Image 1 (cartoon, rainbow, N blue to C red):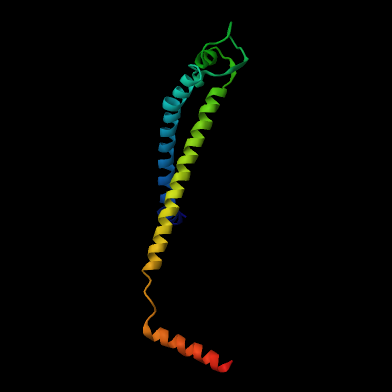
Image 2 (cartoon, rainbow, N blue to C red):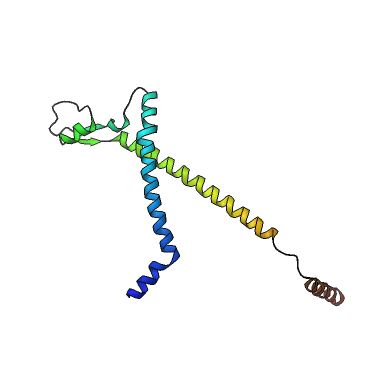
Length: 145
């Protein structure tokens, strides 16, 4: 069983998957930072100095005496909140990742098409004896018909 596990892990597909997951996690952290630290502050500034991370609705106030100014304050007081600002951040993050993956797939497909075209161009014409055999075959078909 240990031997089978070693063979399974040593396969190229498993290693490729592991590398993909690690790079994907790092890419996710980068896009999260882009959304949280670059995109959302600009959008918030454009629509009126809104911090999307602090957009929430208090469902149950917990120990709050009045409305909380920030999400951190509401959570510290034990309030139950509906965090729609954080949800907007996650949706924008998803669309950025989806767009980046789309561009990557488009690029890889273009490279594959170029490789296929290059392979087709390098195919050598059939040898002379093959051409002669094809002519003989075609002539035999015509004579029988």
